[in-house]
Image (cartoon, rainbow, N blue to C red; front, side, top):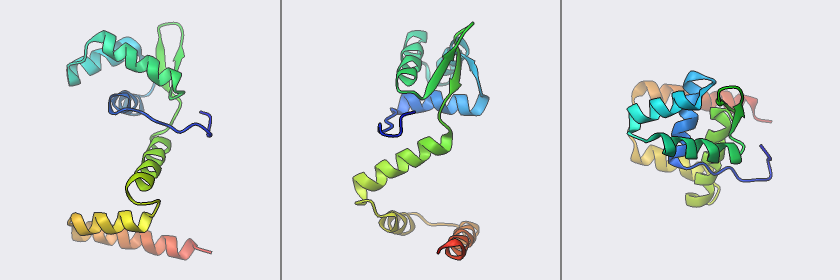
Length: 127
C-alpha cells in the first residue's frame, strides 16, 4: 500500500479483513458464504466489498478461483485506525486517549498489572 495515501476502511470492509486475518487466504465465494451466515449479507454485497478492498490495496486477488489475500496486517490497520482516532478526537495526544480510557473504563487488577508492565518496558526502552 502507498504510505502517502490514508487508509480508510469501512466497518464492513474491516469485517472482510478480519475474516482473512482469521482464516488466511480464501476464495471470494468462501468469504461470501461466511458473511452471509454471520451477517446476513448477500453475495453481491460481499463481492462489492472485496472489490473495494482490492481497489484500496488492502486485498490482493489471485487466480484461479478468485482467491483473496490480505495485503495489510491487522497491526497496520489497527495503527492507521488509532492514528485516525487520535487525530480526530484527541488532537494527536496519546496521553489524552489513555486518560479518557482509564477514566471511563474500569480495569481489572490483572489488566492494571499488564498496563504497568508495558509502561515499565516502554520507560526502560526510552532514550
